[in-house]
Length: 388
Image 1 (tube, rainbow, N blue to C red):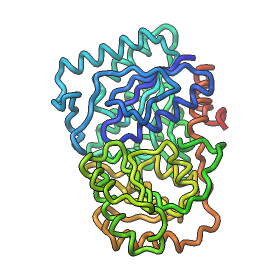
Image 2 (image 1 turned 90 degrees about the horizontal axis):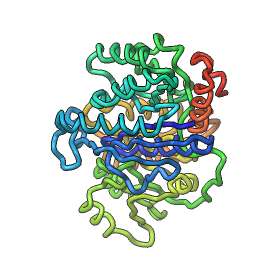
Image 3 (image 1 turned 180 degrees about the vertical axis):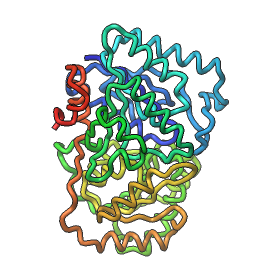
Image 4 (image 1 turned 120 degrees about the horizontal axis):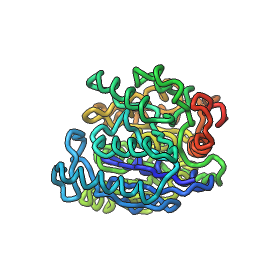
């Protein structure tokens, strides 16, 4: 079974890591995966289990989602859009997939409709009966214009065979942030959350404080606050490991690295991230999907700082819900500083862990099974049952 997986990261690298985990699970299930990569390559996330085809890369400037930039930092043109659309359609013809797997669209990634709608239409017109599936995280960014949510439902109904929601309804349902979810109920299947496999060798206890920032493009305030909080905490003499992310500005990275000593480790990235968190005394991080799932997988005590610049509401919504369930502590970006972070660390260390809610973290493997069942022409409304 062949899968053409369209992956586009614009700001952070969370989509890339989730995409890697999905590609690994699909490959383990015997699928041939071709990734159409729409963002700039990130060497730390090479999609080693898939064939990667680089499209002309697009990115954003900061958190400005209104303008796509090309690889030279210039706003994309109609000619650029046409060239990328044609490259994607040529890749479709070359790979002859059984499944086209998208991220977020049509519930997000609207600025990529110039290429994704033609791709969906090509698959729909293919006499081979190609399936079209979108892969969405648990929480959508709040729509500023309600009519766009309605348009997404119409596109989904016309072009999609399934909407795979990478969530556990115990924590979030799709309808909490998408107002037309009930109209698509027959297409929706919950996969559970996508994170590192549960059946793995856990990292040994290391007693470290793990400070991480995902991709790192907006990590400066978090790193500075962690440095200021350290001497105010009961963990001040522990090893503190700072993982800045591959997109952390080079000058800021060099300044932070200059502070390294036997109890202060500064790295951009570690392939052992889950193992390090498994054994950590505490995790301090931003609150992206992947990182908080790493927290749940590890069971670590954790403090998160949700990214909420521009239109971003997702991280705050998720982390507030998890805090209410006793799974972590939250410091908002507007309140972030050494003293407030130190207070949240003290609260996290003092929390009675007790019995934690059981959250389904098997989303990658279940996604592969759902795609397999879809190709067996199982009715979409039965997908969730088939995967359980």
